Amino acid sequence: MPKADLEIRIPFSKLVIGLTIALVPLSLIGLYAVSHAQSSLRDMVGGNYASLARSSAHQVSAYVHDRVVQVAMLARMPAVVQAVVEANAASAGMSETAFKEKVARTEQIWNSSQADPIVKALLSSLAAHAFQDLLALDRRFLRITLTDQRGLAIAASHKTLDYYQADEDFWQAIHAGGRGSINLTGILYDDVTKQNYVGIGVPVVEAGTNRFIGALDVLMDVTNIFPQGNVQQPGSTMRLLLVKDDGTIVSAPDVTLAMGKKSEEFMATRDVLQSPQTKGSGFVLTELSGGKDTLVGYADTGLRADYKNLGGYVLVAQDARDAFAPIRFAVRLIWLIAVTGLAGLTLLTVYFSLHRTAPFQDIAAIRSPVAEGRAAAKGGQS
Image 1 (tube, one colour):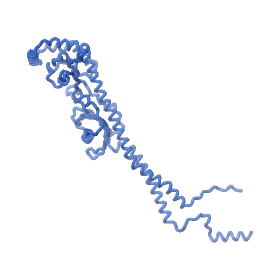
Image 2: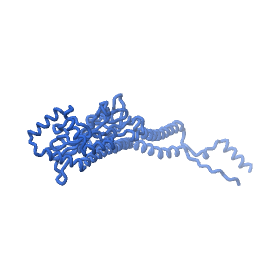
Image 3: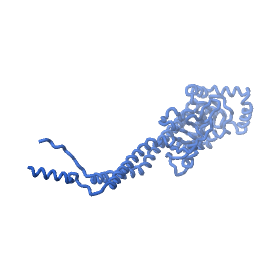
Image 4: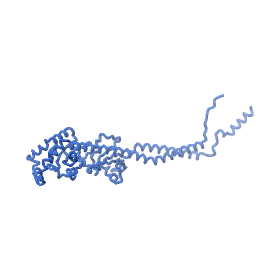
């Protein structure tokens, strides 16, 4: 007996009903998921940009704190403390009037050859030699100046602009009314050396009592505070920026502090960055010049809390089209699958409705009169 072929026959009406039951819920779930997941995916991408900005901001903060620790350790060197103690002892019995007269005379001749003996002493002490050796070993140190408790320069790596430093704002900030305080300037640019630098001032204190006895001021190179080359930039339109509180760019691709440029990304997001409700980091989607939507992740360096003159932000910016490219493909794919499924089901249903002329029957149950006659003839012959 020949083996019968296995056949599975499904009525067309049941096929349509089955597809409807299967595809409609799946398509609707897909559309619902896309509409609600798109914002979540954007938040995820924006959160990654904020995280990158926060990581870079922490690096900037750590760099500055490390430099401050270096200067503070320098201020505790025995040669530095001893130089201050000896200078204070030498002027301990001098009246205020005599002191002011000495300052006036020295300041008057400071830029002439008459001041050469004083300048020679300033640059040849043990402390001065220690400063000069440090500059030779560590190029980040640009200038070092040590003053006594009255503000007279007593040791330095280079000849100072003035002999008397106590009338300068930076010295008064270090003195802090006799209490002694760490003081930093903002990030500045030196036209001569073509370097970015920060002035770091720390008090020299008496061992055992921590009483203010002098001030150490250091100009520190911070050109590499935000090295662009060490930051991965996965997209051609991605850019990382370090900006001051007023938006002046300290470091960015093809931009230096010397150019004095303001960050367009900062200006577009300034209200958010400086809002009291804004936390340390986050992201915004904003429109820049030319109508380009741009995703900007931001993070406060946090330096302002410790050093009032040194604030700033790290910004990570990229054209929104490129930033959201990975999720755009996934979202479009889900939309395409869902819409295609619904469209196909709709067309199938329409086709079924237009071509239906009678209730569907099993094909095996439909027999023509001719076929029935032949069957009857066969039965008669047998």
